[in-house]
Amino acid sequence: CVRKVASDQRAELDLSHWIMAGNGSEPVQHGTLKRFSEAFEECGFDRRAFAPAYGLAEATLVVTATSPDDGPVFLSVFSRELERHRVVESAEEGAGVRTLTGSGKTNLSTRVIVVDPETCMECSANVVGEIWVSGPTVTRGYWQREELTDQVFSARLSDSGEGPFLRTGDLGFIKDGQLFVTGRMKDLIIIDGANHY
Image 1 (cartoon, rainbow, N blue to C red):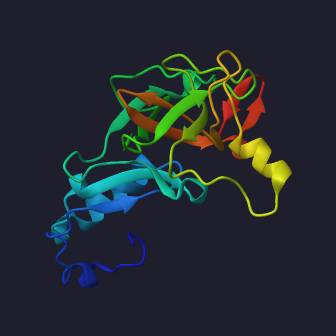
Image 2 (spheres, rainbow, N blue to C red):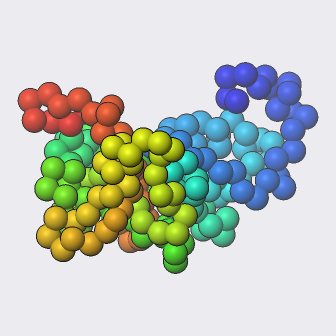
């Protein structure tokens, strides 16, 4: 939108009545939201209208969402620590800092946990792991793909046996009830012990 909507077109836009702008990309990029807000502020767009969310087809789309009353939540963390799957907050933005966008909170019927994909144990606070989901909106599996269904939809915590959970393949963490998606396991490259998304 920023690249394709010309300034003369923006002059004719009135976005002042837009109260909720959903964004469900994984992860939701802080820079994208910032550029859009700056470009369309003159049209009356209020950045608090952004409502980042997280979902996937296997969970009937929505897993977490931002309420239109809350607006987006941002968290600045040290990039080097994030490369080691650790979440260490930074008081400032800038070099060596990455600003993450929260993807909202769960509703009462959906449970989201963050799990170490190797040990299948729930991660402690401020540790990045695989996002696992359970609840009535999670489908039972893939049509006629029993082996894949078992791998993806039958996950259990190794220490308690609790489950089943849907293994999303997405990486993230939860802070103050807010889910932050940091990337996908399939897109993760490990170089000298550092994780690059």
